[in-house]
Length: 325
Image (tube, rainbow, N blue to C red; front, side, top):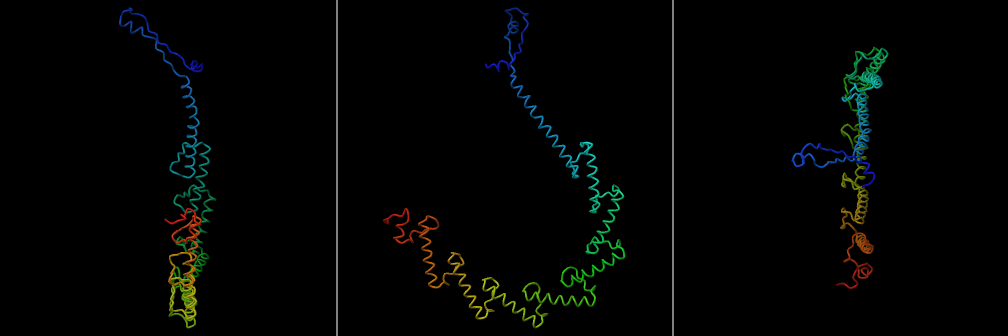
């Protein structure tokens, strides 16, 4: 046993009283051997060290809990327990609550408590509420209360509403009320609608009523539609009507279509129409594919079909038998 183990153990001895004859059964039981109980001191010290080590963790948990409670109180969450706050924190929370109440009142929330506002805060709130109501009336918001407007403010709101209605009628959007238009405004609206219809017909978008176009506008719309169709055909887009192309346009479109098909075939795309290729183009593709296959076999990268190699090419490919089996 090491010196540390000798020092680290102590003995508790239990000794019986010799009060019975040597030959009696009771005396033999009483004179049993001394029992020695050894308690490892090293184990005790380890337990003590563990308990001391857990103390900062427990304290950290308490601090973390206190911080969480403070955060809950600061943000008005349900988990707030104000009885756990320090006097300094309670004072800070009173200021936070007051600021939150001022903000709620400014935003018109039900949680606003006007009784907790100071006189300057109530005056500032009244001014802000009035300004917000004026802005709502001028913008046509549903929160507008016309009864709270002054005569001058009511006049400005009416002017803004008339201008908003005229704009909606001209643009064909919003809640246009033609009955509120003057004769001059009604004429402006008719002119704006006619221009919008002509623009829609010319651009091929939106609602177009050809019957409302003048002869010149109809001509412009037809020309623009023809140009769009020619562009669609040249680019291979779906909205192409070959029957509307002129002879020159049809020839140009066929050239564009042939070039696109050749490009698709060279790239190996599924849209390739091999039947549309010329004999020379088809032969060039065959040669290009043969070269690609040979390079793939030679480099060991890409799809390789050795059965398509010439005997001379096969000899240059690593791993190819020199004599066919």
